[in-house]
Amino acid sequence: MPRIYLATTNPGKVREFREAAQALSIALDPLPRMAEVPPAIEDGSTFEQNARIKAEYYSRLSPGELVLAEDSGLAVDALNGSPGVHSARYAAVLQSGVALDQNSDDQANNAALIAQLKRLNQDRYTGKYVCVIAMAQDGETLATFTGEAPGELLTVPRGTQGFGYDPLFYFPALGKTFAELPLEQKREHSHRGKAFRQFLNWYGRQPQ
Ligand code: IMP
Image (cartoon, rainbow, N blue to C red; front, side, top):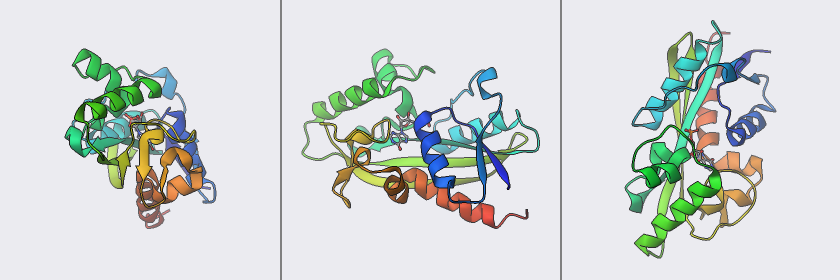
Protein backbone atom coordinates (compact mmCIF):
# COMPACT_ATOMS: atom_id res chain seq x y z
CA MET A 1 0.00 0.00 0.00
CA PRO A 2 1.46 3.42 -0.92
CA ARG A 3 2.34 5.57 2.08
CA ILE A 4 2.07 9.27 2.74
CA TYR A 5 3.42 10.91 5.85
CA LEU A 6 1.20 13.37 7.65
CA ALA A 7 3.17 16.31 9.09
CA THR A 8 0.85 17.64 11.76
CA THR A 9 0.57 17.15 15.49
CA ASN A 10 -2.81 18.88 15.80
CA PRO A 11 -5.04 16.05 17.14
CA GLY A 12 -8.17 17.49 15.47
CA LYS A 13 -6.51 17.54 12.06
CA VAL A 14 -4.98 14.08 12.54
CA ARG A 15 -8.41 12.65 13.40
CA GLU A 16 -10.01 14.19 10.33
CA PHE A 17 -7.27 13.14 7.89
CA ARG A 18 -7.20 9.60 9.22
CA GLU A 19 -10.98 9.31 8.97
CA ALA A 20 -10.77 10.60 5.38
CA ALA A 21 -8.08 8.08 4.46
CA GLN A 22 -9.80 5.14 6.17
CA ALA A 23 -11.60 3.75 3.15
CA LEU A 24 -8.72 4.43 0.74
CA SER A 25 -5.85 2.21 -0.21
CA ILE A 26 -3.31 4.76 1.02
CA ALA A 27 -1.58 4.60 4.38
CA LEU A 28 -1.59 8.05 5.96
CA ASP A 29 0.97 7.67 8.73
CA PRO A 30 2.30 10.17 11.27
CA LEU A 31 5.65 11.56 10.17
CA PRO A 32 8.38 9.87 12.24
CA ARG A 33 10.74 12.05 14.30
CA MET A 34 8.56 15.14 14.00
CA ALA A 35 8.71 15.74 17.73
CA GLU A 36 12.52 15.59 17.68
CA VAL A 37 12.98 18.76 15.62
CA PRO A 38 12.01 22.34 16.45
CA PRO A 39 8.62 23.23 14.91
CA ALA A 40 8.59 24.88 11.47
CA ILE A 41 8.51 28.67 11.65
CA GLU A 42 5.14 29.62 10.18
CA ASP A 43 5.95 33.19 9.22
CA GLY A 44 4.11 33.31 5.88
CA SER A 45 1.34 35.81 5.33
CA THR A 46 -0.97 33.35 3.55
CA PHE A 47 -2.28 29.85 4.29
CA GLU A 48 -0.51 28.60 1.17
CA GLN A 49 2.85 30.03 2.20
CA ASN A 50 2.60 28.43 5.64
CA ALA A 51 1.46 25.08 4.23
CA ARG A 52 4.48 25.07 1.90
CA ILE A 53 6.85 26.09 4.71
CA LYS A 54 5.65 23.15 6.84
CA ALA A 55 5.60 20.57 4.03
CA GLU A 56 9.08 21.52 2.78
CA TYR A 57 10.63 21.69 6.24
CA TYR A 58 9.21 18.41 7.54
CA SER A 59 9.73 16.48 4.28
CA ARG A 60 13.48 16.84 4.82
CA LEU A 61 13.09 14.50 7.81
CA SER A 62 12.10 11.55 5.60
CA PRO A 63 14.11 11.54 2.37
CA GLY A 64 12.26 10.27 -0.68
CA GLU A 65 8.88 10.13 1.05
CA LEU A 66 5.75 12.08 0.17
CA VAL A 67 4.82 14.42 3.01
CA LEU A 68 1.46 16.14 3.47
CA ALA A 69 1.19 19.30 5.56
CA GLU A 70 -1.64 21.76 5.82
CA ASP A 71 -2.34 25.24 7.07
CA SER A 72 -5.85 26.31 7.85
CA GLY A 73 -7.90 28.84 9.72
CA LEU A 74 -10.91 31.02 9.96
CA ALA A 75 -11.47 34.30 8.09
CA VAL A 76 -14.27 36.54 9.38
CA ASP A 77 -15.50 39.19 6.94
CA ALA A 78 -16.30 41.86 9.52
CA LEU A 79 -12.84 41.36 11.07
CA ASN A 80 -11.09 41.91 7.73
CA GLY A 81 -10.21 38.24 7.37
CA SER A 82 -8.97 37.73 10.96
CA PRO A 83 -8.01 35.53 12.72
CA GLY A 84 -6.65 34.22 9.36
CA VAL A 85 -3.15 32.78 9.50
CA HIS A 86 -3.11 33.58 13.22
CA SER A 87 -6.11 31.34 13.95
CA ALA A 88 -4.16 28.94 16.17
CA ARG A 89 -2.72 31.78 18.29
CA TYR A 90 -5.45 34.40 18.05
CA ALA A 91 -5.88 34.98 21.79
CA ALA A 92 -2.13 35.46 22.30
CA VAL A 93 -1.80 37.72 19.27
CA LEU A 94 -4.67 39.95 20.41
CA GLN A 95 -3.28 40.13 23.89
CA SER A 96 0.30 40.91 22.95
CA GLY A 97 -0.28 42.76 19.68
CA VAL A 98 2.49 40.79 17.96
CA ALA A 99 2.53 37.54 15.99
CA LEU A 100 3.86 35.12 18.59
CA ASP A 101 4.85 31.54 17.75
CA GLN A 102 3.04 30.12 20.75
CA ASN A 103 -0.43 28.66 20.03
CA SER A 104 -3.32 29.45 22.39
CA ASP A 105 -5.78 26.78 23.49
CA ASP A 106 -9.14 26.45 21.73
CA GLN A 107 -11.07 27.86 24.66
CA ALA A 108 -8.94 31.02 24.79
CA ASN A 109 -9.17 31.49 21.01
CA ASN A 110 -12.96 31.06 21.03
CA ALA A 111 -13.34 33.51 23.92
CA ALA A 112 -11.14 36.01 22.05
CA LEU A 113 -13.21 35.63 18.88
CA ILE A 114 -16.51 36.05 20.74
CA ALA A 115 -15.19 39.23 22.38
CA GLN A 116 -14.12 40.66 19.01
CA LEU A 117 -17.50 39.85 17.43
CA LYS A 118 -19.48 41.30 20.31
CA ARG A 119 -17.62 44.59 19.95
CA LEU A 120 -18.99 44.82 16.41
CA ASN A 121 -22.53 44.25 17.66
CA GLN A 122 -23.94 42.95 14.35
CA ASP A 123 -26.85 40.56 13.73
CA ARG A 124 -24.80 38.18 11.58
CA TYR A 125 -21.12 37.53 11.11
CA THR A 126 -20.22 35.82 7.83
CA GLY A 127 -16.90 34.11 7.32
CA LYS A 128 -15.18 31.05 5.98
CA TYR A 129 -12.77 28.34 6.91
CA VAL A 130 -9.81 27.89 4.56
CA CYS A 131 -7.48 24.91 4.28
CA VAL A 132 -4.41 24.61 2.07
CA ILE A 133 -2.75 21.22 1.77
CA ALA A 134 0.84 21.13 0.50
CA MET A 135 2.54 17.96 -0.72
CA ALA A 136 6.32 17.95 -0.58
CA GLN A 137 9.20 15.59 -1.17
CA ASP A 138 12.83 16.20 -0.21
CA GLY A 139 12.22 19.84 0.68
CA GLU A 140 10.29 20.77 -2.47
CA THR A 141 6.56 21.43 -2.83
CA LEU A 142 5.02 19.29 -5.58
CA ALA A 143 1.47 20.68 -5.42
CA THR A 144 -0.98 22.59 -3.22
CA PHE A 145 -4.77 22.22 -2.85
CA THR A 146 -7.20 24.74 -1.38
CA GLY A 147 -10.62 24.12 0.15
CA GLU A 148 -13.04 26.66 1.60
CA ALA A 149 -16.23 26.34 3.65
CA PRO A 150 -18.50 29.38 3.97
CA GLY A 151 -20.48 29.91 7.16
CA GLU A 152 -21.46 32.26 9.95
CA LEU A 153 -19.94 32.84 13.35
CA LEU A 154 -22.04 32.52 16.50
CA THR A 155 -21.32 34.21 19.80
CA VAL A 156 -22.79 31.30 21.79
CA PRO A 157 -21.03 27.94 21.25
CA ARG A 158 -23.01 24.89 20.11
CA GLY A 159 -21.93 21.25 19.95
CA THR A 160 -19.13 19.17 21.37
CA GLN A 161 -17.52 17.51 18.36
CA GLY A 162 -14.78 18.84 16.09
CA PHE A 163 -12.08 21.15 17.43
CA GLY A 164 -10.92 24.76 17.37
CA TYR A 165 -13.61 27.24 16.35
CA ASP A 166 -16.13 24.52 15.36
CA PRO A 167 -18.66 25.27 18.18
CA LEU A 168 -18.89 28.85 16.81
CA PHE A 169 -18.89 27.96 13.11
CA TYR A 170 -22.49 27.69 11.94
CA PHE A 171 -23.13 26.05 8.59
CA PRO A 172 -26.46 27.42 7.31
CA ALA A 173 -26.97 24.68 4.69
CA LEU A 174 -27.33 22.10 7.50
CA GLY A 175 -28.59 24.42 10.24
CA LYS A 176 -25.79 23.16 12.53
CA THR A 177 -22.37 24.17 13.73
CA PHE A 178 -19.40 22.06 12.63
CA ALA A 179 -19.18 20.91 16.28
CA GLU A 180 -22.64 19.33 15.86
CA LEU A 181 -21.53 17.15 12.92
CA PRO A 182 -20.00 13.67 13.02
CA LEU A 183 -16.57 13.44 11.34
CA GLU A 184 -17.92 12.00 8.12
CA GLN A 185 -20.46 14.78 7.66
CA LYS A 186 -17.95 17.49 8.54
CA ARG A 187 -15.59 16.04 5.90
CA GLU A 188 -18.30 16.25 3.27
CA HIS A 189 -18.67 20.01 3.76
CA SER A 190 -15.45 21.21 5.34
CA HIS A 191 -12.52 23.16 3.93
CA ARG A 192 -10.26 20.22 4.86
CA GLY A 193 -12.51 17.65 3.21
CA LYS A 194 -12.63 19.71 0.02
CA ALA A 195 -8.85 20.22 -0.09
CA PHE A 196 -8.33 16.51 0.61
CA ARG A 197 -10.60 15.48 -2.29
CA GLN A 198 -8.55 17.67 -4.62
CA PHE A 199 -5.40 16.06 -3.29
CA LEU A 200 -6.85 12.58 -3.95
CA ASN A 201 -7.68 13.56 -7.50
CA TRP A 202 -4.07 14.72 -8.05
CA TYR A 203 -2.62 11.69 -6.30
CA GLY A 204 -4.65 9.32 -8.43
CA ARG A 205 -3.06 10.84 -11.52
CA GLN A 206 0.55 10.41 -10.31
CA PRO A 207 2.67 7.59 -11.76
CA GLN A 208 2.96 4.98 -8.97
P1 IMP B 1 -2.49 25.75 11.96
O1 IMP B 1 -2.21 24.49 12.69
O2 IMP B 1 -1.41 26.78 12.08
O3 IMP B 1 -2.89 25.49 10.54
O4 IMP B 1 -3.74 26.42 12.69
C1 IMP B 1 -5.02 26.04 12.39
C2 IMP B 1 -5.99 26.69 13.38
O5 IMP B 1 -7.13 27.14 12.66
C3 IMP B 1 -6.51 25.67 14.39
O6 IMP B 1 -5.75 25.65 15.56
C4 IMP B 1 -7.92 26.18 14.64
O7 IMP B 1 -7.88 27.22 15.57
C5 IMP B 1 -8.31 26.75 13.29
N1 IMP B 1 -8.96 25.72 12.45
C6 IMP B 1 -8.53 25.22 11.27
N2 IMP B 1 -9.36 24.29 10.80
C7 IMP B 1 -10.34 24.17 11.71
C8 IMP B 1 -11.48 23.33 11.79
O8 IMP B 1 -11.76 22.46 10.93
N3 IMP B 1 -12.24 23.50 12.86
C9 IMP B 1 -11.97 24.43 13.84
N4 IMP B 1 -10.91 25.22 13.83
C10 IMP B 1 -10.08 25.09 12.76
